[in-house]
Image (tube, rainbow, N blue to C red):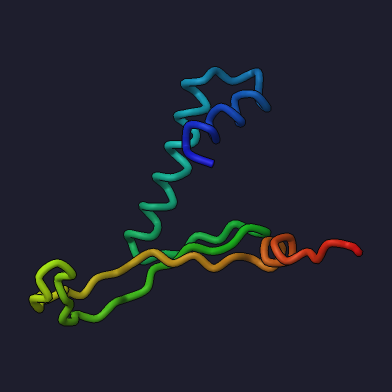
Amino acid sequence: MIRSELILKLAEENPGLTGPEVEKIVDLFFKEIVDRLSSGGRVELRGFGAFTTRARDARTGRNPRTGEQVPVSAKRVPYFKPGKEMRERLNVKPEA
């Protein structure tokens, strides 16, 4: 599912909201997640999972085209850990 499909689905299930209102809600939702993560926080959505960031140390990488070594600076990267309910739903074994 892509962002536009999510907006359409939410608009269908909430006929009292206009398309632009739903789009504004989705934008605000994602903005709040990014803002919290960028300030070093954590976002937990019960039954879904938790978003955090992890630190990556500086290292020496390699340009795949030329093989030349290039420095890669330290950075923080987003990390998602699925919640228990999501893991269980993804791993349901079909009945025989």
